[in-house]
Image 1 (cartoon, rainbow, N blue to C red):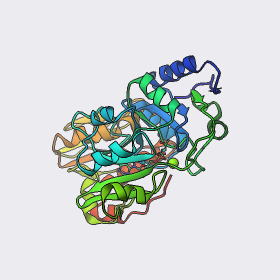
Image 2 (cartoon, rainbow, N blue to C red; image 1 turned 135 degrees about the horizontal axis):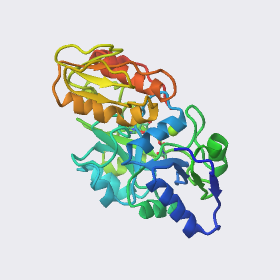
Image 3 (cartoon, protein in one colour; image 1 turned 180 degrees about the horizontal axis):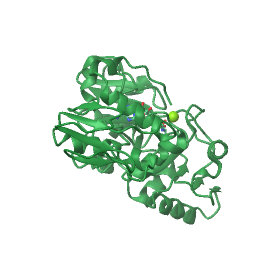
Image 4 (cartoon, helix red, strand yellow; image 1 turned 90 degrees about the vertical axis):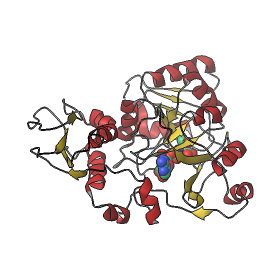
Length: 336
Ligand code: TXA
Ligand code: MG
């Protein structure tokens, strides 16, 4: 994910070829920071599990907060997620622009499960910034982009801010000058009883309410710690029990392995990373949990994962998957 010949591309310096280079790097699975009308995003190919894992690693996120998928058009958004009713009205009114909609993933959704943090929903937006739009058209695939700051630091609104946080750790910074809006996009989700505001941002609440024709309820932005019990149903956890720190495999268990020395399997086994690479393990985590769960074991035994680097985020997510479901709801959440 890292590239030592990192460079910043300034406005006016061969913009065509800069865009082409940025698009090429993204298609290769590398990370490129780019401007949006809200803040700079740290972009990666949303369909590439390793690129998505690289974003968490580079940001130093302690756990897998789901990411926002950026697309060039509403039409492209419809190839990823299901839009109905209010979601269609909001998308048609505010896109391109600083509004993110959290909607159900399509069955054939090409976006990495890691970007959705294992949820059945995906956060999606069509940015308005001309450089972001040109980049999305050039790559012709969805791009995940959290704000381009290290975890816990302030969101960047200039290329210099991004350079200050990441230096040479990312392949390229596309410089589009300062961001117009400077705060992140507004996030709207859709619960059983209608739309709710998950994060305030670039589109003001009254503007949303005018389009919806009614007041907007408040929601919680962390899907892993929902306030209302009904929201728990959208939180992915395997149907099977999850047994952590496993050193053996019991009857009717599936094994989620890690590293070279794996106990003798009695049932299905998937190895997150035979070589012990935590980035590879993070990239495989949600997809492998689902695949093992589909085999309907009594439990999924999970081998110990080192608790450093991305291992911290992997262990956070595994603990949530292993916890009794009502404990998950009460878990505190650290925003990144
Ligand atoms: O303006 C923005 O939105 C910027 C630019 C770069 O587009 N991006 C941004 O991303 O702020 P980030 O990763 O810093 O914030 C993403 C937030 C998460 O913290 C989470 O609260 C919410 O989006 N989110 C993403 N997927 C979600 C989902 N499936 N359900 C609920 N919330 C979700
Ligand atoms: Mg952020």
